[in-house]
Length: 66
Image 1 (cartoon, rainbow, N blue to C red):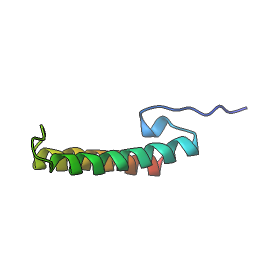
Image 2 (cartoon, one colour):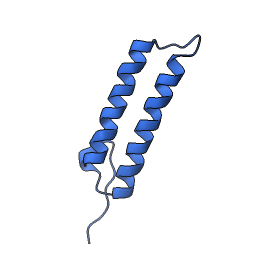
Image 3 (tube, one colour):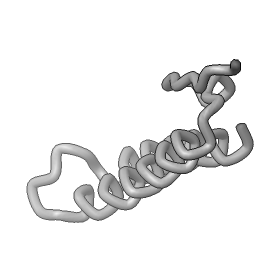
Image 4 (cartoon, rainbow, N blue to C red):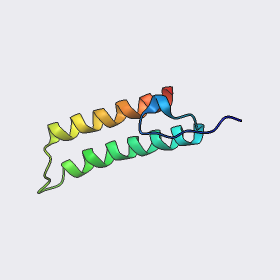
């Protein structure tokens, strides 16, 4: 009987529900990073936030492909 496997690495996740959850969470985090960077006093600048959000979206896409 095959077992579901979870991992922070998209290519190692075998559970479909886990893949979908990880994708959704990374997309949500990308939105938060961009939104928080625009607030006064943010520790992260807009360019850094865009880069971080882009990395999260890339990771979300990898979970969707897995």
